[in-house]
Image (cartoon, rainbow, N blue to C red; front, side, top):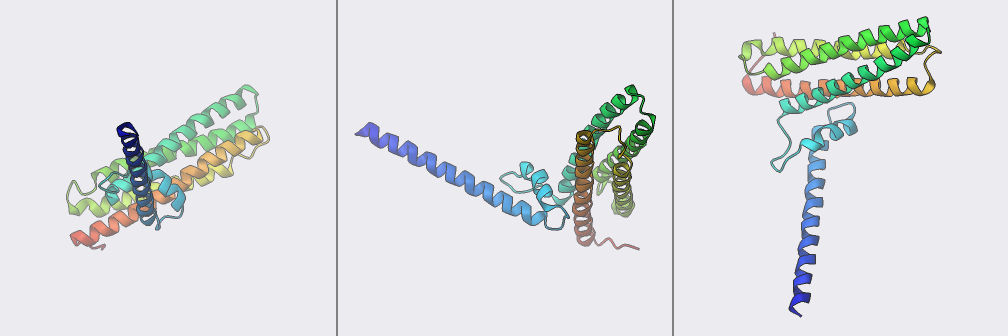
Length: 206
């Protein structure tokens, strides 16, 4: 009888713990969804930020922008690696026209990776070196991330040669599309961070 009662307690505790975990996860997701409403791709935003939610809530608005930008940078780097592989294959088949188109696309992606890297470093400095430089950092990040978006769009438009298989085209386009979406979300989260920071510190745009 005592053993049966003990088993009942264990089962009850397990069920309660599971319910608390589910409720906690549900609450975290709801909270992240509210933070991602300002983005153009909220589902991707939730997917990006949800793993970083702790019991104390979501990271600061600045860190949210950093996490989104870091994910964008990582995705862009992996995309560049895949494109290098496709370009090497095209080069081996002596398909010069398609190889040149891919090479130009890779050049755009290289620029994009550099711009996102610069933006990430700039974002990390914001608020650390005085209010006077805040607007300067803000302008740099907006300019570089926007340029990375343009580069990604230009890259996609130039890789429609016949030498690239449909599967490879689809893979490249899907990867670059994700880079664009992450960059767009990063800009939205960054804008929310800078707006809040300027308002709380009395920084006015000239």
